[in-house]
Length: 431
Ligand SMILES: [Mn+2]
View (tube, rainbow, N blue to C red):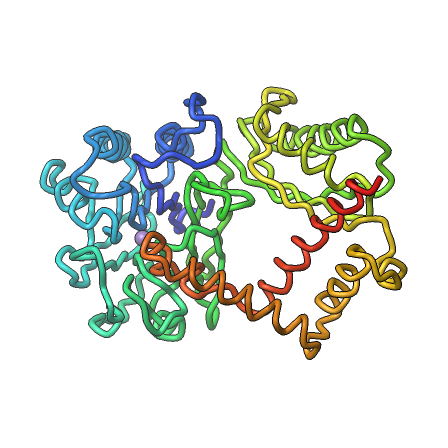
């Protein structure tokens, strides 16, 4: 590190108080708290100049002395160890952070932009050779429907500048501080360190770094891949970012080809071997990884679809192999493997399997001008809409992923899969 650059360790969306879903609950090393402690120790060990927290460090309000205590302890430890802490509040911890600011005071801890205003602070490197200006804005309440960037007035001073903000970058509307990337890029700043989106994303807009560090520990299967903190170096000519994979957990999506399998036992061995091989590679690459939760997709052609379904269901509940200290579970699976019989041949017959095969071919090829296929889609659409509109599932309609009922393509794929399972049944009962 050159003497006039400044090192930052950055994280956001830690959600202290939440538990990662669909992993063994008794495993303490998978808790968010443990990885937060690792973040604090890493900042101290590496003697970084600043720790930046981009919001949602605590999961939610009026809860959990435990979660708040972990935040307070970590921040104190950093400040006392000579690491300046620069933070903003997110939608989840809009009141936890101001409370922390009141209890810790300002020495070494900077909560920027309380009450939804913009605020600056200049921090020097440990050796006093370099300094960086931080500018940030905090959520004043749990939602913010307009872009906060309009209120930012930032003078150019010649000091490298880093913006810190919890927001939905790249959105023009939303309830969590929607901000256009172009608007961020127009601010005279070398980099933006952002929070709210849990997927890590190192984006450059017009040469400006716009970094989402992502959740520190992944919290559910929707957060696959490598997670951890980010090391940022702000130098006189460039700003670099590097991910430090501190997470003890990984959600992984893996495809397994089941073509050519002969028996149920074969299936179990094949799945186990695929997982052990993947696990060995990941464990060697990252010895501190404690657990991988796999979501398996079975592909290929096989006559063992029913057997694979049963075997995988059984393994999902019980399997827990270990390789070099890293354990694994099957969190879920999807059977996309196709039967090994020939639908075209079957469709020649006029018996029930023949009629069903004919309909499946039409659904598969998308030949939905056919009247029977149309009628099927209509009925499927009606059935799923009824469920979707049920008051019981009302909360799901607030989520962008489940706001709309299944579309035509989803329905077609659902019908196709169900049809194949029905065909398997017909075959089995005939054999
Ligand atoms: Mn958030």
